[in-house]
Length: 455
Image 1 (cartoon, rainbow, N blue to C red):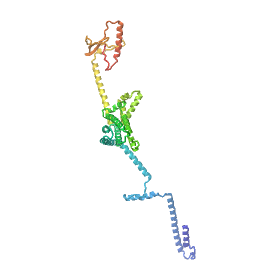
Image 2 (cartoon, rainbow, N blue to C red; image 1 turned 60 degrees about the horizontal axis):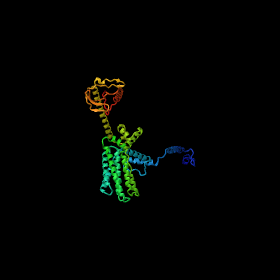
Image 3 (cartoon, rainbow, N blue to C red; image 1 turned 60 degrees about the vertical axis):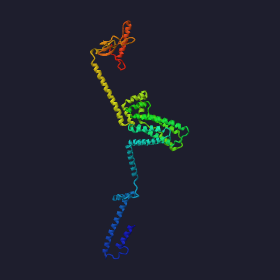
Image 4 (cartoon, rainbow, N blue to C red; image 1 turned 90 degrees about the vertical axis):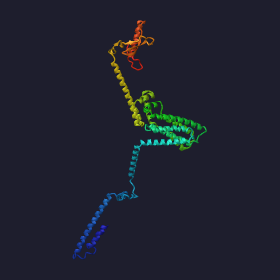
């Protein structure tokens, strides 16, 4: 090895080996100097060996940096020195960094979507109604290419105007507007294929279906307009119980459009068929669904009719508020509806207070004779003394006659039963019947029953 070669060279030149030892002890100075130099060289060599050993050990224990890291260092340094320098073309971002960025972007997108979800449907629905109105105008301008298209388009535009005015009230109005938009788009496709009648009689069939569609749209318009009436939310319970539903009209409109499609030979046109089928999907009316479920559940639970259940639910503020919130009814509409109910209750309470005051005032006018009551033969003693009675009766019956009289300055009617010319048993029987009648009359308090003052 290189260490053995170095020792051999040292012995040859400084210790006299290999023919250099003939001088003996006559000159010892070169020998001493050579020994010192050799020792220094030996120490240097040993030190180098030790240093090399530890360098190798350190290199083995410390893993070498990857190529990506070695290349990333000068890139960062270059960016610090000059921010405008382009990144090294061989440098690729770590895979996990891209994945994290994608996740962050997805989360931000979800947050942004959820943040604006309430405004986007309204804006898109409004834009759809604008486009539908423009399409209806084009169909009106086209004239008689599609039989009855004029009346249908005018009815559809009236519904769109109502939806524009009231879309903030409830999501059901937005759904109704979408039904009309899909209907106009459907009619536009039919108008473009007006020459595709299957038979010669198809035109008359189309006219019949278009007339039916016009009637359905007019009824649909009335149902949408009901949302603009005062107290519409509570009245919705009753209309649903009687079957006056946007949902039903929606399905009927879809069925009518499906019959119109059958009059055209478009079955082989796959693209057109798919487009038309998409427009034939019925809309969902959340408020009607929620209310009908409550009506159905209550009717089943109580064993009553839908009409009776709806009448009860219309007075239930908590249930009305719950279904309205579930169906995205505008909070101002809910508040206005409940405020009207509160005002009605306050008015009723005020009327009851007035009635209580009148009763107390009338009781204060009663004399001690009017308040004197006692039990006699199991019947309340209602004997009173009238102030004045007309001798001539103004009405007669089978067993009695009726006179005008005054009791405590109030005009009353007196039913007089003659007891002359009857036997004692008959008189007792008549008296018992009168007592039984009095026992019933004193317990009845209704505006439909004559008030009994006494006997």
